[in-house]
Length: 465
Image (tube, rainbow, N blue to C red):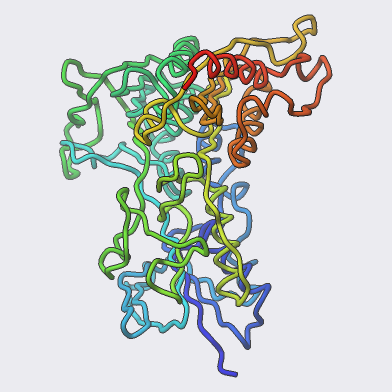
């Protein structure tokens, strides 16, 4: 039997999980595997970058789950610092450029292809946005470049543009490094991944940390000082429509978009967000020998029934397992997601799963909302701290639609209760009977999530049809 060739574009979570799983199922004589990665690192935790920058964890080596040498020891031909520049689907080949060997270009053929090209930070086309000292944070190379800037900077003023997960986490990291931090957020509250009433709790915590958070701020450009580099030198300030904020370093926390430049040029199908469209087996729609996974794809939201782009390493690793199984001759599917995410600012834990209010409206759903304040431990137990739980439930049916939690120790991971309930399609009434663990150091008799579910049951009954 002739040896098949599997080519993987992208050597992080989805790509290398696919390579490893395919190798478990197929021996080198049956399936040759070549993976291309343009950066200096493979199989790493991008989610750990803010904690590396803040000095809480070592990096970059500590953030690498498996080195290139470990992959190669498993008969995976991993080529680092090689960038794929073209997909020739008609001839079944890819063109790649070696970034550190004089830019030499070559072609290699494939029988099966995996696209795991990830995402790229949003970088608006504003004056000065590409100036030295302005950083997006998506890869370990990005993290190292930011640290180089911080180490070389004589000043201690930082501006973070955007107050989503990355923006908030990077703001805290910069505070830990002794920077005076200003966060510029266009929305009414930080964390637009929460409803505004819950985002207001995050704003309070950021202010308590000494982070100046300017809400409703539309950034108009980046000012630079004198210098010989293009654009007039290093960053010195960020401007909005009505103010100027001094900066020795700027971090962009505006989210990411799918990196599908290669796919688009090859005519592969893309969704509304620009992510690749796949079936449940993670095959690119219309192609039985091409798969895609990770931050470059759109996935099914199990609550709304709509496609979404959600860039998380948890999904990317699962995509890779499914792809590797299928490319290796087995069968696996990825059913979808419920949109679970968790983060923190200082000791405030922030979590959500399911739909926000505006997302539920956009999906055409009629719903009720409730918010409760409860403690994460029995009220009499030392260290009991308040947490806020917001719950959305569908009118008439009572189906759980979403949960947001903001609180101190023990708050964030409680969202997993709701994530399981959402995946199972449970109603809020069914949730009230869940047999959750109880002991005073861990929970009140009624867990805060169940308190919210009880209140939601009442709201559904009151709302009627």
